[in-house]
Amino acid sequence: MATISQIVTRFAEEAGKPDARLLRGLSGNVFVSPHDDRILCSYDTSFPLAQIMAGELGERSWWLLNGDTYSYTTSTHQRLTREACEKTLLPVLIVPFSCLRAAGIDRESIEPVDIRPDQWRDVLVHAPSADQVPQWYRDVARQLPDGTWEWTVSRHLLGASVFRAAYTTHEGADWRPVTRTTYFLSAFDEQEPSPLYFLCQLPDGAEPSTVGDALQALKPPEVTAAEEAGRQVTRQGDVFAIPADVSTRMLPSPTRHGDYLLGLTHTATEMRTSHDGATYARGILRHAPGHGRRPEHVRQPIGDRKTWHRIVRNTVPVDQRGERRSWSLAGNVD
Image (tube, rainbow, N blue to C red; front, side, top):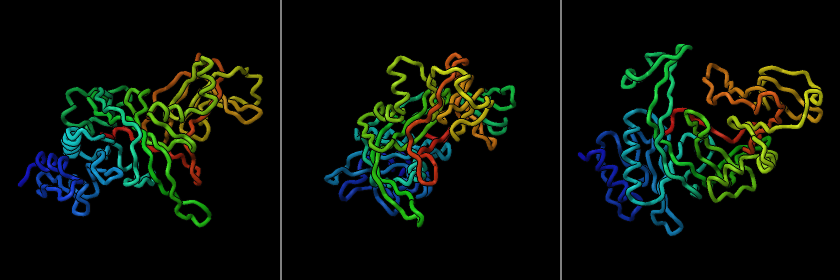
């Protein structure tokens, strides 16, 4: 019976070629999908590891790898697959397939635009109790004052990427399916101590050629103008705080403490509303996801904490149900 390494290596060398010679052994539960010879799976067809993608002439063009994690063993399968695919010297795009499904993206339609190299980084990992700390980390984990535990791991961070793809949503009174093609950004929010993965749809009209272009496209015009003027803009997740030349007297609404901003899961120490309905805040930005979830973003002081800042959110589109076309994963990306 073929070994895991042999199956993965042969798949990377042969998948997508005419008359491909693929190993069908089930060693280690890594196998070629019985439904599609271009796909390698771990344990079950519901967890694809990799898929070879064809270019315009039908030739092997690039690799699409699944960035989701499932178990320690599957992570090993993913590492072996990633290393084998990289040896082919074809471009490798890694993105969590769970996020692609949530976004309604057709995997076959994906066209890579820009892919940055992968990274390895030491990051903090948390667990609510000692019995949820993996055995191999118990000697280095430490208990925090709130009773939770944390430890440092060396984590593989998939490279940020921009790609174009078709996605399907349901719209109208009859909730009919509608398919469109646009650009998406797959990346980590590296402002956080434990980088947070996100996939988001870029605004209509954006046609980025690089990851940097895509990140700029997520900034609303007010943020771009403030930065060009040399003003220090604060960001926490999808919220921006822009310094404003307004006094408390110019903001007629009563001060609200700890309120949610713009209907998102971010709060501020103090918040007020202007005559035109704009939201202003000062103090500290906090992430408060609720439902017992741990905050995904660290606290961010808003400037000097005394100056009022106008609060705006990024340009990620909102669908007909009022939901933002953005998806995140904390600690579940390889």
